[in-house]
Amino acid sequence: MTTLQTPTPATTAYPTATARVGTHAWDGERFRYALVVPRDARQSLALAWLILGMAALVASGLFSVLLVLSRTPQLQAWFALTNFFRVALVVHVDLSVLVWFLAFGGALWTLSGGTRWQPLAWCAFAFAALGTVMLCAAPFVQAAAPVMSNYVPVLNGSLFLAGLGLFGYGIGLLCIRSMLTAAPVGTRISPEGALRFGLHAAMVATAVAGMVLVWAWATLPKGLDALAYYELLFWGSGHVLQFAYVLLMLVAWVWLACALGPGLRLSPRVLALLFAVALLAVFLTPMTYLAYDVGSIDNHRAQTLLMRYGGGLVIGPVALAVLWSLWPMAALPLNLQALRSSLLASLVLFSAGGLIGFMITGSNVRIPAHYHGCIVGVTLAMMGLTYLLLPQFGFAAPQSKTAVWQPVVYGGGQLLHITGLVWSGGYGVQRKVAGADQVLRTSQEVWGMGLMGLGGLIAIVGGLLFLVIVLRATRNRTGAPA
Image 1 (cartoon, rainbow, N blue to C red):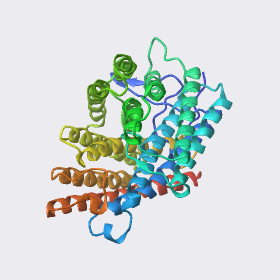
Image 2: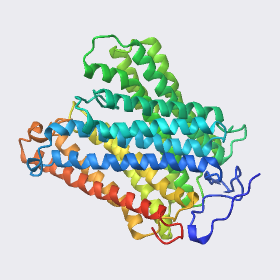
Image 3: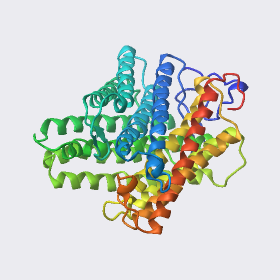
Image 4: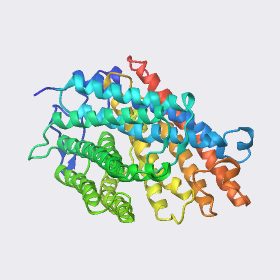
């Protein structure tokens, strides 16, 4: 069995790994969950996927600046951005959700998988990277009408659609290769095995999303207008991808919590069972496609019910176990404080997004408030896990006050952002519009959208801080604070 190398003080590694790969120690009923970055070809491939996700996050942040300015009262008049709003929104959503989340998943699936089929693995990455470049370039190269379909909005032009297809093809190859090389969990599930099972579950959910997407594409009726076509095309697969994102977030929560304390009072078998419950709704999705036509209201309603009741069953128990492991709050070194800030901010934002979901009535800006909270919750968990993984990739660990406050700034800005959207949504401000199209009639609507804009700008600062911290860490292999 391969023995882990003890990190040098210069890397300031986090105390997550135990003595040997595949074995983890627990204290009484507390279990320590962690994975280790392998010292082989998987490390460079996982790092490539992480860099791709970070690049997508940078590009989405640039487009988000245009979004915030185009919807903020007083500022929107300074910029002729109303026509570009929907174009920027399409690219921002696809980069910040689809590309960032699945590229991060690619990094984790690479780390937890085997070493076989490496050429296929690099081909998958190449297709995904080329597709991402095409998505970013499309708005500036080819004029195309934005289609605001749910989950995956598109620019209805050949370059953007080709980029989206290449990225999806790369992710499909990634899932196939990961399934072929997945390490067995075993009958006696260890803490590491339970985490691997969670990652495998997210990978399977992504593969099912791809299968459902192809199913919808093959069976959709001809002659639909663009909005109806893409809405139906991505409706089922978009719902399934939400399960994959949640599973990745839950793995990150458990991993981060164990880096901060003695472990979770949640056995590996129970944790694996919770991950399996989340997969149940995923496996029910193809059955709804067998039972109902793709374009029927019954199929539409079935996907909504599966997401509402299927994913939420496992989030609460894992969140409670994570919070219990953190109590009482103890003094921590700076590097661990950054992890705790990320974890707590993720828990708060995801919970806020979930609660807002129960307040939605009609089609207004409460809907983006709901999914912004949930999406940002996933993003913050991935940010914290990025901080955790950097030393294992051989880089410096973020251990500065800036790193501690970055999740607070980003999460706090996003909390203001969604609060403004909820406030404005209560007065009927519509979603997916900007500038004069918002028709802000009352001072309450103006103040609500103003708060949204202020929170968005603060969140952009927090996102930029994250990128700066990671870049400083990757440029420094000597261990100085990042």
